Image (cartoon, rainbow, N blue to C red; front, top):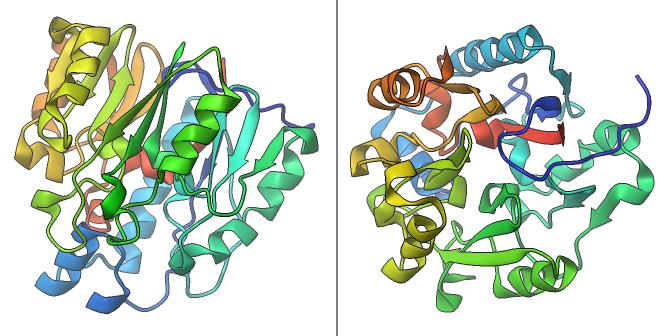
Length: 307
């Protein structure tokens, strides 16, 4: 198929090449101590952690839908007994570079499993982030000249497992992309209570269509930072999700192009609004079981090329 020249400058360009996580050998259910996000913690606590079979069924449905829309789908190497669902956090594309994250200790092996991805991408396009610089793809959102980065209060980094992006990362990308407006947005963090925590920026906000976005206003530590989103998009171009919708990860969808989006089939209010008010083609997939692990559709995918 040839060497891939990565390029992504927006969340809504035509999706051509994507990495999709793997559901094939997830290993034993984690203990409460082994969870590293608030939603998974609650799923284990309540005895509703998803089965391997349900996860595979949902991810296979997403895979089939991507293929139906002529998207080239790459997969990482399989690691036995290891959760590899959420490919977005291992690496992410900004413009013509694929950045490789410094993963938290619990997820280090996922980077090694990306070997076939790195082999398929132009070697000079791959950037391994400097040691001590922490950021995951779920905290990176692209909107033309804007680069939104989910972050946290400085005192929360190192205190919470759900705090994945530090100020060094924000400073690094501000220097690296001087032509972009880098906008850090501090998110609320907690390791056990999902009503007090937002894992990544894409669990609170995502551009969609042309000049529009879906957003959870209560996710942000500083209301003035949320106001930046309103100022950029205009309140009339925002679909605002409720607390309950946010906990279901309603902002976490995947755009196939500016007119077509993949969403979770249970998001009735969002799906009907997108179809009826914004006249979008909405492709619905079952992903509810996977959401019990704290991630959804965008989390499972790592776009390498959009046009």
